[in-house]
Length: 585
Image 1 (cartoon, rainbow, N blue to C red):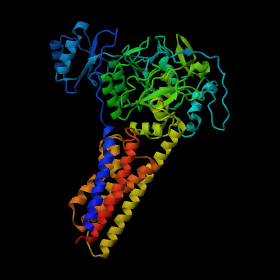
Image 2 (image 1 turned 30 degrees about the vertical axis):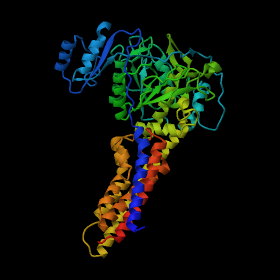
Image 3 (image 1 turned 90 degrees about the vertical axis):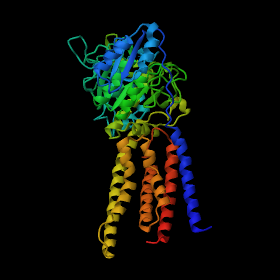
Image 4 (image 1 turned 180 degrees about the horizontal axis):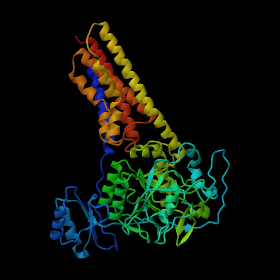
């Protein structure tokens, strides 16, 4: 077989390998169709409308006239979020919905969907000090009831606290509010939140700037994330140096609408939240809520949600949306709690309590329940979700801010457990997660430093070589090839996000492959060889340190893609060098 035939065979094989590796990765980006949204039984007839950004007040007035509806601003977020709401007689709902969906200024129109605190979250107020922490030589907070918080030891919180405690992160708690302030209206701060830092929030139920908790659920959830810690009072919080953004979307009875929750998500994204926790759910999807989750995700917000308390298969919404991290619940033994929902959307499991093992097997935090400010033991996926939100806040405080990277760090560091539809990647291990965060923070600067040194060295050698040969100018092509191959993929990931489709092109050998097929000159082929070699080095680095693209969208698929391109890169580099050697200058 001749040399050219062999080179063409190698190139063709490399192309087939790339195509084969791309197929399973492309399948992960297929967005499943959203099911039709039925009207929840027993709910009042109302429609929620998300207008296009181009909609004007005249458009709204026209919609009112033509539909016969009285569209009202859903919250203070209007007109930023373009969400409106209208009551409608049940008999007219179908016709009004069809008319709205056909209008050119309407992005989404759907029946109002009601969300609630997941059912069956039992509460109690244990007497205290029933459990004793086992001394392990690590720093532990001096909160007197910390020994009862088995959940933090289960996930390695004490080891994580040696690295970070959440400073710089802002966690939005979208719930029943938080008992965070004392005011003239009779609201007061829960006794173990005096040292917790808060940023301004909003009450979407009462339409004011005082999102206080009149139910107790939201305060308990916020406590797991950032209850005041090491203050010789009560319990500890996981990311206790993070700030809480209280957003009230659930009433005293624990119910809230899809429009209010969507507005709260957008509020959080627009007001600096880095993490959102939603310990609420519904079996009914909401397109408007999904759109809000997509909006927040694109703005770099990690969204963590309770999977639900159905005790069977079927993850609720918004946890089931792709942009959210769905969390199932385990008890002290690490086994799935009997109440926990599960399904293929579950990303990770975390402590949620299991009171079939006794009252001390619940999650203990401070809250105000029925007018009593005390330490209550809850159980539910509502309690599991804030553990993951707190862990995400710890990663954010380390500088890991892309939600795809946060999710990947949590999943890749989890303690493996099967089956995957119950535990996702496994049980949350916050100590391993922050260790991974530290590694990422070390490896990225190291890669940039090595890349800059390599580019500088090659530029210096190129200049020296040209001067010895008596040639003018600088090796611009050499520097461009190295910059494109070594640093280009990272720039694309930073610009478009780690789970962007653009990363598939940025981390592939498509460009040098096409150039290889077209170029003939020696200098051009040498450029292709150098570019392919640089990109191959980048891919090998990603494989070694786990810093590859689209980490949250695929696991083995992404690894297969990286390996296929690494092998193809070596082949393309070899072919280009051989062809350049035999090419006429």
